[in-house]
Length: 360
Image (cartoon, rainbow, N blue to C red; front, side, top):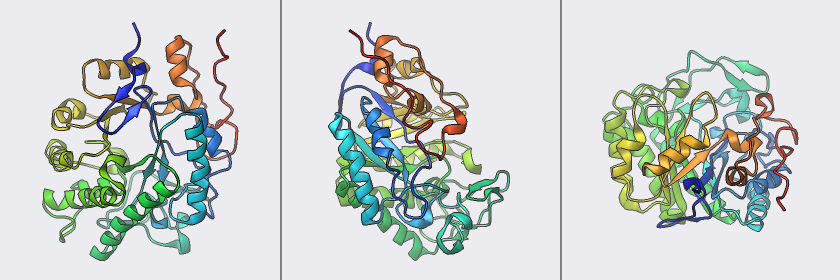
């Protein structure tokens, strides 16, 4: 019996060769001065074009959203041209590719930002328990500066402009990163959003930034080209959500009528987000598990088999298995990735993991 991961998917806005998505993964190989993707980035993604859907590493929509060294952007004409080479290579290999738009908020440092700028966040709540990586190694976080209402509105416009640049660069769509403790989830979570304007206070206020970003991006390029990634009840980066069920039910209920390309849910922690939110979402749903070890293909198969998602995304397995769908089809062994080669560097640990030999 064929794996459900290998079946084609024909959804409201996505037609995919299989139900395997390549999850977004930071690789830290862009030119740090310009934010332009590495010359090998086109080869990296084209090697993985057998995925039904590729979602790129996070790309900043303005430079204050840059989380660390070697993180690419999607703002300048030079960056757009660099990503056009990537999308051309993926499309030539028959793939579908979305750009992830990622603003990290407080999860950065003046050493990572132009002019030593202070990181921005919904409220001036510092990360206390873990360091942040910079060109000078790991350092302590600094207290972020609370965004003014005008800065929040400008950032929403920056997301829309980056989405327009994604279309210019040839991407099939964009994924808004609302997960893993970055800026959008900082607005959603009670412990990081202590604002008194319309972007804070009540649950309605805390939802406002996420909804406004998605609506602005959808208005710019069409909702059928827009996905959203969320990670309800994920404590990563010192996020503490007091009522994840209430928050994310309200978020999904507000977004479902827009007719987005997909909702991408990372399930982590005690809240069973896939089972709870699946009945509330009428479009394509992509499932993902985020744990200390790479998620097994069997786990993805089980999610699809019981109808909790239409597509399942894998991250670390795609680092070291560029032909992951082919390996699953052949029942071939999976190659483990080398952790110390994930971030930064050049070809090693990036484009040199071998594909299976052709079968005759």
